[in-house]
Length: 99
View: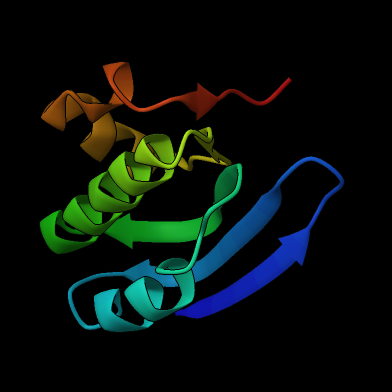
């Protein structure tokens, strides 16, 4: 999985590309651990996600919120969207829908 960090005027974008599974979680955590700012997690190019990756996203979401910032998730492809819907996370996590 590739991880790209981009800065926008009001937030940081963390864009992921590839499979997001247990093998990639340590890299994700290393990239995401220092966030103390508004964040958008871009999953446009993620075609698979497992439960360990979901837990890492939830932990990041909690940490960003506890710091008083916002976090959203965007670019959901159907396989990832289905996993979020099945787990009930689609209704909990802030999702940016494509316009």
